[in-house]
Length: 160
Image (cartoon, rainbow, N blue to C red; front, side):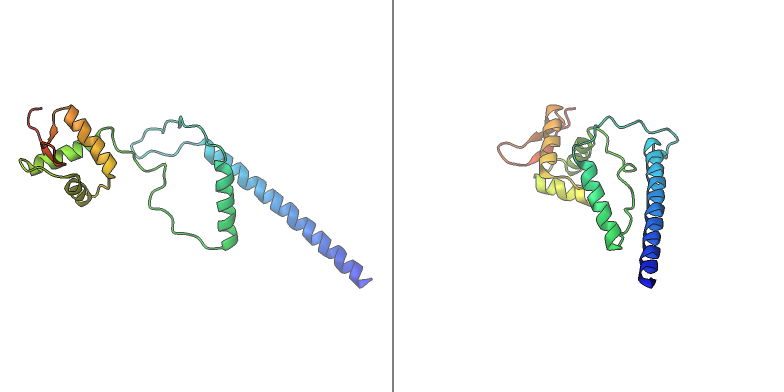
């Protein structure tokens, strides 16, 4: 008799927990949907334009798995200083402009890409060598830089 009453009480407690969990989950999902529909606030006072990117396949599944792992572990990582939506993307042609300034400052001396990269890092900009090479090609097309002979060094060209 006592065992049946105890098991019945346990079943009622489990049912109440399930209902509370479902209600809390539904409220949380509603809040997430509402936040997803809102655009993030901009610092310059304008409203952010909606993203034109489509959602990739399977991205939601990967995110939900990592989120559930974080919930289970109980550990939280330190929040990022700026979220992805708050980071500003550099302007188009910014790499070429910065590299042009570096070559101009070093003129008339020619610089190899390694020295250009070191100067960029001193300015707080990290670029891959392929990006540096692409920017040098853009500068060469504008006659702002030219390759010295058959060497791998580049020089500022004042004929712009």
